[in-house]
Image (cartoon, rainbow, N blue to C red; front, side):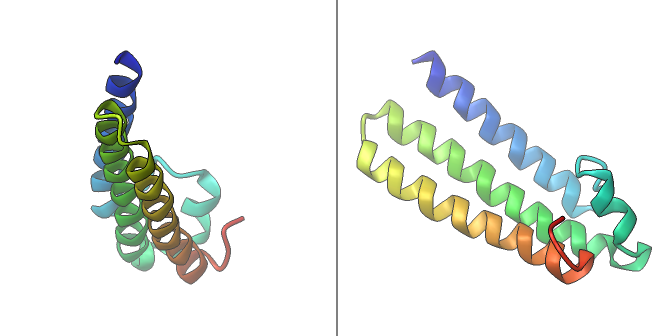
Length: 102
């Protein structure tokens, strides 16, 4: 039971980080991303990456709830779909404003 609580805390943490990123404060991201994005693009970049983090965090939170309820197949479907969508938003923001993910 404790592993589901810790997983839920991780999901909440990622949602908070995503909310902070959406304000344009991207200090939680690697310095490479902060230096390659122009100052005027920092807020739109932060919003896209932040949405990705929030989706991933919410996905992890829902995953932990479904696992606690012993709904493993639904949990697997949620984690795969949510991670793909969340990473899609984050990578799109990195590619659009950073000209690459590395």
